[in-house]
Length: 403
Image 1 (spheres, rainbow, N blue to C red):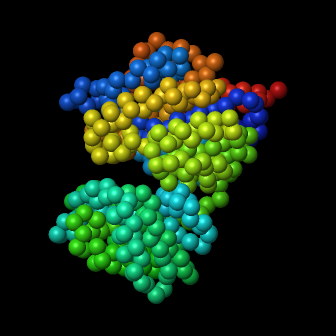
Image 2: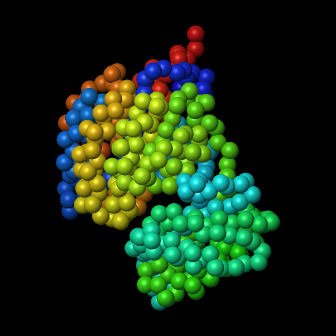
């Protein structure tokens, strides 16, 4: 598999009538919790996942490489078969595309969080208690009152505590550092230029951050901002041309819609909830032969460090699984873009469980879908970029390599 993964897929792919359903449980993987007696997957009651696992091939994936903690963008790119190191994409671009902003190559986008600072200017909550969208929209309007002569910029609300900062102007560049230290008890970082061209942009970003804190000073929760993922629009290989698939993406969260649109997937109207996403899947099930279906709740609970909430999120998904499987895809894959153990309350470097079900998969001895059963599975531990070749092969969409 490692050798075949170096062969350009577009040299082997072909069309067929079979279909592929890739279900991504964001932050799926967990860790053994000493107070709970198992990982989130092990503790959760998942009769439907366990039943599917018994007739599927199981394994573990490394989104980047062993020991490297991935962001959501690289993690998803790997699942779609792209080398996430070769095709690096900033989070800002993905968030902007996900809410329908038509970026130009001359603009820079950053992903932003409203945050909570104490009286010493130190971070006590990087997500401002996940303020609701109505409040965040109001705050974005307030921040758009900031004026800096050299550049033009706009704050665009994304979802809950998240926003996009869009920068335009002569000499603007993404070659600057982030202001989010991604830890608590310290103040937001000062942005710095990582090239000569980035020095002026970094100064402008620091002025914007300072003005934002001034305008938000009276807020109890969202009294500061954090910025990361500064990026400009890249050129990406077209997923449709590589795979000969008719792909569609179903995701309530904008960032994942942005990534899907960037690589050429049709982004379907997904609604705001996972139930809405399932309805969309059913509605369009005959119109495409590849679906990317995204489930966010597992990652949210893991990042909050809430083990029980992540267990509930897994159990909720399990309850919806029979309805999802009713679309009767030839190949069904359940995977994660990274692990988010509640024990760590963050993304982690641990390998991610996955299963692949098709008429040609090998039944497992395991009776549970978990980290341990996937580690013992017939597929073994593979790069996440190998999932797409496996999916294409199991759906009869790959030609033989060589004479």
